[in-house]
Image (cartoon, rainbow, N blue to C red; front, side):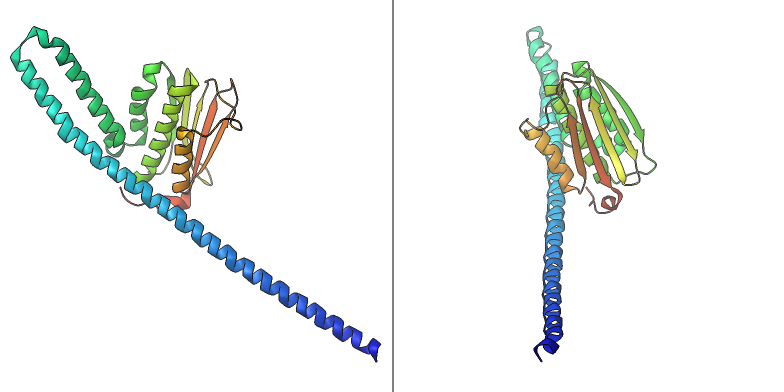
Length: 249
């Protein structure tokens, strides 16, 4: 009798194990579902905060241009009307202040990007940041689609932050920028011939962290490759499915 019951007990044990395994798998599925939901919610929040930040930048840029900029222009006109040679240095200082105010306003909210497109805006950014350091920039722009304004602004900001890092740290003489399409999405790649750095050992400063934060907020992937004395390459991949998820600016 004992031997005849063993297959039944064995069958019950297998059924119990299979039931427990199914429960564990279901719990894993629910947990993964919750993690995916929270991840997408975090990305959505980060993206909305980024858009809000850009909207605030646009507001302050307009205030800077329309208020402070106009006050400086009016002050210059008053000094010019005095026709006093002793005020020449003040006039020159005002001219510099007016131009600096205009440039700061354009950097905060690059209207050239929305008026003339990303390629022209990058050329202007080159004149503002790289040309004064005698670094040469080549641009290879090869997109068959016209990205939304928010996507163009993301690419512009990544390029801007990368240019700033190059000016501050790279000591580069040549910078190559490419924007093109792949089967996965839009790629922005910036490579310089500067002194480079050890990606693994260097602390993540504000500049690099800003690049990573912007990419993460927009569902893009950012890759930074560099070695000492071998320059640096920054690559951003923005998947096609993310293009339609950008809000208006």
